[in-house]
Length: 151
Image (cartoon, rainbow, N blue to C red; front, top):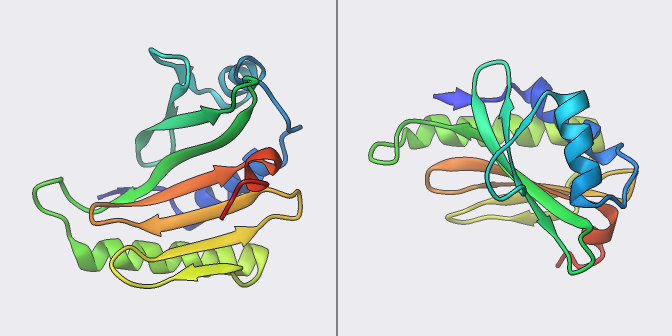
């Protein structure tokens, strides 16, 4: 299992939400490398981030003006692609939901089913979303500009 702690999830979500948005990819790259300790990878929209118990790629999405709309990275994985511990994966998701609800209140969007999803409004105008897929728990961060297009 590789996973961020619930505390790391809240810390990184708040850290991203409190950046001075809007930002271009170039502006964010300076912050990510200098302040976060992340490194750039090929393509310039993907960063390598090291957390306390794992390393993950962080992908950034941008609009036609070059401003960042969203970013996403796995919060947790439970097993390999061939053998996923679904109980552990669900436990991770439930833990992140509890931590997010404690930090930001009840989610404004909830989806149940095969790939449950929870999303919170952050006081800065950002949207923080997690979804449990068949193999991981994915965090998607929407900047205030990206949140305007959120459905």
